[in-house]
Image (cartoon, rainbow, N blue to C red):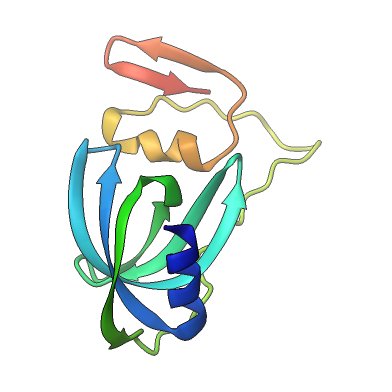
Length: 125
């Protein structure tokens, strides 16, 4: 899957993906314009313009279940906007978050130190 998305990004091609969203536990079919692929915190991610939402979105590559070419070119938006910009350093303050089920992606996207569970479900610190 990752090779197909990389090729689409390099060739500025729109693709149709079948994607499992952990936050909603749903699988959807979306047409996306891949912009950038990067590795962070043990996972590969795809930054893409999502035609369904009309917004730039971040997709975890291992949750992309199918990739099909659409035969369309990517939109002419500015590319490469979504790589993560927060990186922990020595002088960083510790932040604690209580995340609801719909925000699970935050803990997957950023490096975490500790995970605890609350009555509403798992949270990561």
